[in-house]
Image (tube, rainbow, N blue to C red):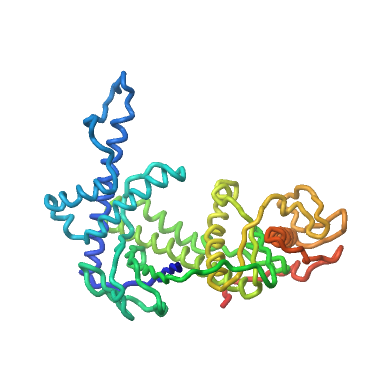
Length: 405
C-alpha cells in the first residue's frame, strides 16, 4: 500500500474563511471538553481509599465507566440536540477530533508520551472519509462547505484513490492536505551501486564519503533581526488588542518563512545527494538529546531530524537504498586502518592518523567510516579502500547549496 500526501494552498472566500475559523473553534471546545471529562474520571480514582484531600476531591459515582472514544461519540450525538453550535461542523470532523484525543492517550500508555494537554487553538480539522471525485483541477469539494478554490502548484497523482482531506490553518492562509492511496505492494530497495556515507555537524552541515563539504546555512539568523524587532514592539502592545493581534500574525509569518525556506533547502539537498549515489548511509542519532546540549539553538535551526526524514523519503521515492548505522566512535576511527585515534576537540578539523599517516578532513573521515559500517551491515564485503597517507580532493571544499537547483 502506497500512501502519499499532496499539499495545496486554498483560495477561500471571506465567508469560507469564517466557516473554517468557526469549525476550528468548535473542534477545540469538543477536544477540551472531552479531555476534561477524562481527567475528572482519572482524578476521582486517584484518592486513597482511607483518606481525602484537605483542599478538594473529584467525586464521581463509583460505577461511572471510564470515558472512551465510543462513549464520547455517543454523548456527542446527544449534545448536538442541546448545543446548536455543535451542528455547524460535519459530524465526521468532530468524531475525528475525539479520535485524535484517543490517539494521544494511546501514545501516553504505549509509547511513554506525556499526559494530553488542553488546546489553546486548533490548527486543523480532518475529513476521514470523502468521495473519490471530491477533487478537481483547481478546486476541492469539502462536505457542508462546498467547492473551494486552490492553487495547483503540482498536478494530481494518477491512479491513486482519495482517502482523506485535512484543512490546515497557518500564518499565510489555509492549506489543504490530500491523502491518496494505491493498493500495490512495494518491495524494499536492495543494496546496489555506489554507496555514500553522510556525516553531519555544525561546522559544516554535512560531509560525504566522496569528499564533498556542504556549508551550513543560517535559516534563523537570516531573519533574526526582523523577528527581534517585531517581538520588541509586541512587548509594548496591550495583550488582546487589534495591534497586538496584527503583530502576532506578522511574527507567525516570519516563523513560517523560516520553516518553509529550511524545508525547501532540505528537499533540494536530498535530491542532490540522491543524484550521486545508489545507496546512502547516515548515523542513527538521538536528536532530542542533541537539542538539549550547548549548541541547542544551532541544532534546532539545522533541523537534522527533519532532513533525515526527508532524505529517507526521497530515497524511497527514487529507489535508493537508505540505512542508519551506529554512530559511536565515527570521528575517532581511522577509515584507512580502522584504529582508534582518540577523542578530538571540536577545534581540531583535520583527521591525521598516527598509525598509517592518513590525513583528510575530520568530517570526511567520519563519513568514510559510516559508509564502511553501512556496507558491513548489509553483508557486503568492504571494497572501499583508501590509499595510506592520501588526501582526498575536496578537503578544502566549501560547497554552498543556498541556490542549488
